[in-house]
Length: 422
Image (cartoon, rainbow, N blue to C red; front, side):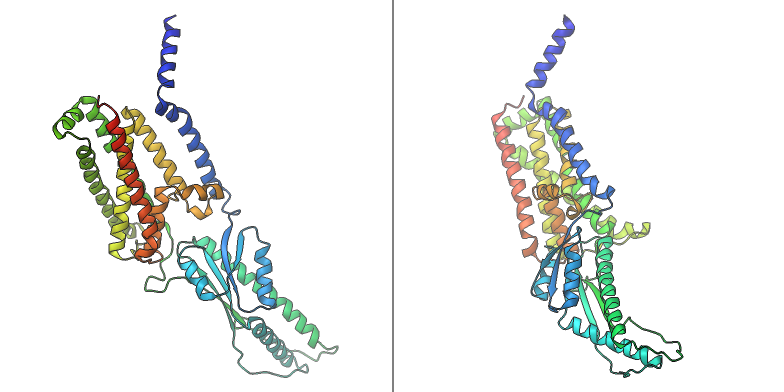
C-alpha cells in the first residue's frame, strides 16, 4: 500500500511540473529527432544536398545550353537563371546563393572556331589537305564565383562538373569536325600533338573584392566562431545555478527587501555575465589566431572591421546572457534548469549550423535554423570573417540577437515579479 501511495505521489508531482515533464519526455524526443536529421547529411556524404547556383547565360548558344541542360537534370543543383553577371556576383558575395556560373558572350562561337583550327592543323600535320591557320584565337573563360563560406568539396565538385560538361562538348564538336574534313585516302602520317588547354578555360574565384579574397571556409574559420557562441550560451550553467541557489537559500529575498525591486538583481547579474561572455569571445579568438597554427591548422583570419566584430560579439553575449537569466528565473530547481538549459543549447547549436553548415541540412532544418539565435550569430560572423560585410549587412542579424535578449530579459522580469522568492 505504501508503495502504491509513493507511486501515486510521484505521479502527481510530475503531472504538476510542466518543466519536469518537458525535460523527461519532450526534450529527449526533440534531441533525437534533430540529431538524426543533422547527422543524416554527413552520413550520406552530402550526396543528396541540393545547392542553389546562379546561371548567367550571356552566350545564348549551344555551349551554354549544354551546361544548363546538364545541371538542370542534376539532383544536387538548383539552377537559377540570372541575367546580369555583376548582380550574380553580388548575390553570391552576400551569401544568398553558394555559387554563380557565368558563360561569356560568343563562348560557343569561339569554341567552334578553336575546334576547327585544331582539327585543320592536325590534318595539315598528317599531310592531308587542310588550310593551316596560325591565327591566335581568343580562348573562352567560363567563370564560377563561389561564396567564401562554401565547403571546399562542393567547390571542387561544381567546378569539376563544369569542366566535364565542357570536355564532352569539345569532344562532340571535334568528332563532328573530323567527319566533315576526313577524306578517304591518307598518306603516311607523322606524330603530332593536340593541345586542348587553350581552347576554353574554367576560372574559379571567391566573390570577394578585397585583400581577404583568399579567405575561405575551413575548420578554423567555422569552428572558432561557432563553438565560441556555444560556450557563451553555456553561461547559463553558473548563471542559472547561482540564481536558483540564492533563491533557495533566501539571499534573493534579502536582496529584494533591500532594493525594493527585482530589476536591479537581474540587471546586475546580466551585466556581470555579459562581460564574462565577452572575455570568452576574446580568449577563443586568441586561440584561433595564435594557437591553431601551432597545431598545424589554419590561422583564424578576422576579415571584417574590428568594430563590427565587437558589435556582433556584444549582441551574441546579450542573447546568451538573457537566455541564461530566463532559464534561472523560470525553473524552480537547479536540476531542471541545468538539464533543460544544456539540452536546449545543444538543439539550438545543431539547427543553428554550429556542427554542420545550415545549407547542407534537410530543408525542414534550414527553415528551423532561421529561429535559432546561434544561426543569426554564426551568419553574422561568416559575413564578417569570410565576406567582409559592412554593418548594413550584419545589422538584421544583430538586431535579431538584441531583440532576443530584450524579450528574454523582459520575460524574466515579469516571471520573477509574479512569483514569490521562496
